[in-house]
Image (cartoon, rainbow, N blue to C red; front, side, top):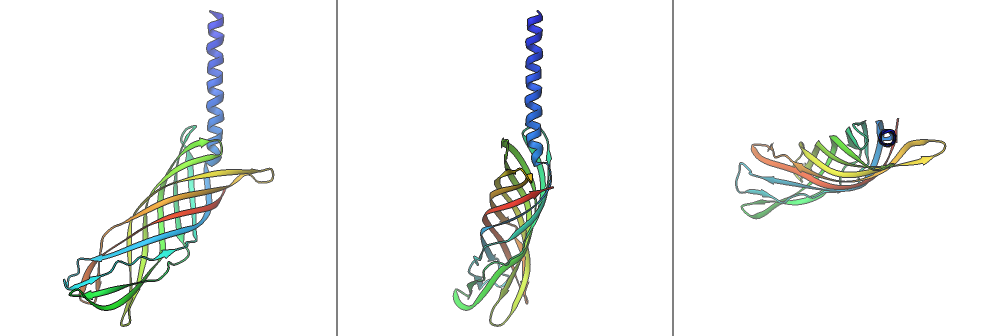
Length: 221
């Protein structure tokens, strides 16, 4: 009987020690951090449903090498799971791309467009896959400004939508700074909402979305 009790106590102690160690590891990711990232973004803008039916447009497809800066905060929920919130903005504008405007199917004129003023907020659930690496997902909402111009006019409008993605971050250790820095990579898609815009007396629908592949560095506080 004593042997059985000793085995039970030993098992409980091992379980507690393991859980405590695991929770200590996930807590390395807890708290606030700032980060910066870059990579490649591809955008796609579709214009449709013109109130003047003979008028149609090509899609515009700008691309970008972004410079994102962000702030996030992460909570440790268990020895494996985290939940965070993040806000970020891109400091750079996309490339300018051109597309044709048609009237009754015939070429009318060429219009140019690019996107800037990009902002995004996300929920970030995470799962610890090793003592230094956290796998995470992102589900968020974004807003971008679309700037367009032609030989006769120019203007801008705001488009928004939801975003989702997946990424991983890894802490790296140095004797002088401890676990304060991390590197990360993520893939993200953005699905635009349809918004009604106007140009003069004509109204039309705009939908802007895209994809991105990013790498970055961050610093924990």
